[in-house]
Length: 435
Image (cartoon, rainbow, N blue to C red; front, side):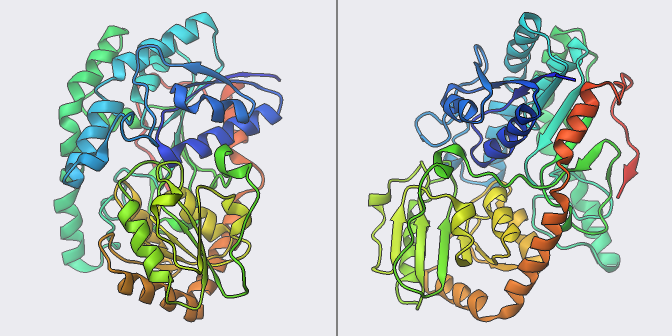
């Protein structure tokens, strides 16, 4: 039966395409879909066929424009400083504003299910207050502590032995500590809509009826156990509308192709892109370097074997690529692995070190620091090109990622939720764990 879905997202760079991919899939099934989003995203929302709805009191941003970026994590001097900006400017600080806008839209036009990008706790608060079933879309590796895995976000290998288990026990309390200062704002948003307070911000992430992780299960630690409401529903591999509509232009020649792609949002990545271009110049390769909307192609001094463009359809380019050099944003990393292409990861921040480490754990790539010299980057590219094990492991992951793609479990889960197959539990988040 035709159902009505209200999606909610924000200008979060690589988190946007997978959310809109799910929206597109529901539209193709004949459902009604509208999307609460920053105005900077409305063209992308329209491109998938959904109806864009602007936030009215919640933040309006554009992650590709440093002057309009809400978080401005590129200004932070430390990872905890970057985290604090996310907490205070998106997740908790404006929770009341996101809740107010969402409830206004639900009162104007009810929905069968609210589907929110997982950082928008204000949206999930509004849906809980309205009694509407909720799904939280996690657009990266599940970023919260669970049994059977090291504390996430630090790029740690699974614990072995007594010292490893001691390490995890010592680090786990530290994972929730930075969220403490966000709790008053979140509870104020809940109180404004008649909801009881929570004792932890971390608990708020588990309150959705479904936690749908848009990441391959095979990329995560094999022994990790997850909340009962969590489902790994496979990666979304769609290119963003602003890139997928372009024709592919490749550098001339038949040397191995290196695809270079750093963040689509502004992370002050110009100098890193330049060092990558300088690293590839002396190598017997040809390179397609996509700057994304946050960096002007003309700002990169390109060697003769490096073609610099603003954007290209990566899903097409990856059919020709021998290696991808990337910041290890989840979207670019998983699209490369789905194509069987190994990676050189140059994390810039956010979840990227964690993704890069998982690529290394899987044997499908290597990681170098964002301050690495052209010489170090070049050696990493040569290593991945010449050691066949990296491509072999990437192709192994590609087979498993493809197996997760059919049937479309995002659609299955959301349709079941809309049809009432999963009743809403008003007693709070489940603590039962599953593998």
